[in-house]
Image 1 (tube, rainbow, N blue to C red):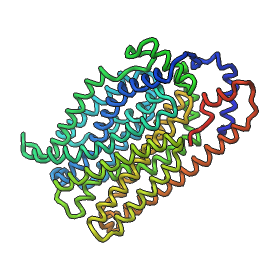
Image 2 (image 1 turned 180 degrees about the vertical axis):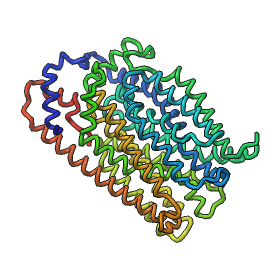
Image 3 (image 1 turned 60 degrees about the horizontal axis):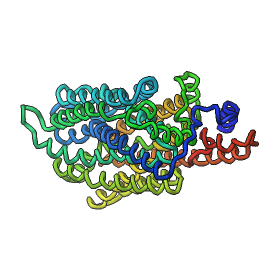
Length: 476
C-alpha cells in the first residue's frame, strides 16, 4: 500500500477525533509541560542510557580483550568469525524481543535482559564461548528503548533523547578503553589473564546495575506510580495530540505483515545496515587499528578514548542542531561523507598523526549519523505493533551489516594482502556511500508523500489535526 493510500485509510478509520483514546484534552501551562518533560527525562534517560553504555561496553570489550592477548592465549584462528557470532544472535532475536516487550512491560523486560547478558558476560571471562548467547540477550534493548521513548515523548522530542541515549555507545568506547587499560594490568591475579578480568568485572557491574534497574525503570505513564494523576493527565494530553502513543492497541499480526512489507521500514533498515558496517567494525577493531599504527597494547587502549569522546560531542551537537532545524536526512548524509573523508585519510596519509586524526573523523561521522538515523523511524512509524516491529527490523537487518563488516575486516582478506585494513576501509567507504544514497532516497520519498497528502481533499474540519496526529506529516 502506498504512503498516501495509508494516509487515506487512517483518515477514514478515525473520522471523528473525539472517539479516539488519544483525544485527551487538558489545560496546562508551558511551565507545567516543561516540568513534566524534565521529570520524564530524569526518570528515563539516566538509567536507560547507563544500560546501553553497559550493553555496548559488553559487546565491544572483545576488541579491547583482543590486544590484551585473548587471541593468542586461546589460540583463536578466526577473530572475525568470533565477533560475527555475537551479531548472528542479535539478528535472530530482535523481532521476538520487541514483540515480547509489546506484551509485557518495560519495568520487567529491560532489566531482565540486562541481568541475563551480565551473567553471560561473566561466563565469557570463564569459558569463552558464549558470544552468540550474549547477542540474543542484548537484542531487545535498543529497539525496546526506542519503543518506550515513543510512549513517553512527542515525536519532535525523540531525536535529542535517542541521540543522548545512543551517545552512550561513544561513552562506552571511551570508558572501555580506560577500564580495559586498568583491568589488563590485573593479568595473573587469581590465575586469570588480564582479558578475562575485562569480561568478569564488566559483567559483574552489569548484574549489579540490572538489579537496580528493576527498581528504577518505570512502566508506561498510565500504569506507573511515578506520576501523579495531574501529571498523567498532562502526558496523555501531550501525546494524544501528537501521535498514537495512547491508543489501546492489541498485538496484531496484520500490523506485523504491514511492517514486513513497508518500503519505508525497509529503507530505514537498509540505511542502518550501511552505517552498521562502519559502526561495529570501528567499535570492535579500533584498538587493533590504533595498535597497528605502532603503539603498544596499553597505549592503544588509552588512545581509543579521545576519538570516542569526540564522537560523543559531535553526536550531541548534531542532534541538537537537527532537532532545532527539524531535519534529519541532510545531517545523516553529511555525517556519512565526514566518515568517508576519515577513511580516505586512513588509507592515504603517510604519517601516524594523520591516520590517528582520521580516526576522529570516522568516529564522529559514524556515531552522529547513526544516532539520527535510529531516531528517524521512531518519529515516522505510526501504529504501536507496526512501530515495534519496524524498529526491531531496522536493528535486525542493520546488524547484518555488522556481520558482513566483521567478516571483511581480515588480514589477509581472502587472497588479498589487505595491509593495515586498507581494502576493508575502502569497503566501508562503499557502504557509507550507499547509506548516503539511501538517506537521500528516503528524504525524497517522504517529502513527496507529504506533498501528496497535503493535496488530499479535507473530509471534515479536523482533517489537519488528524493529519498531524496519525503521522501524515513525515519528519524528513
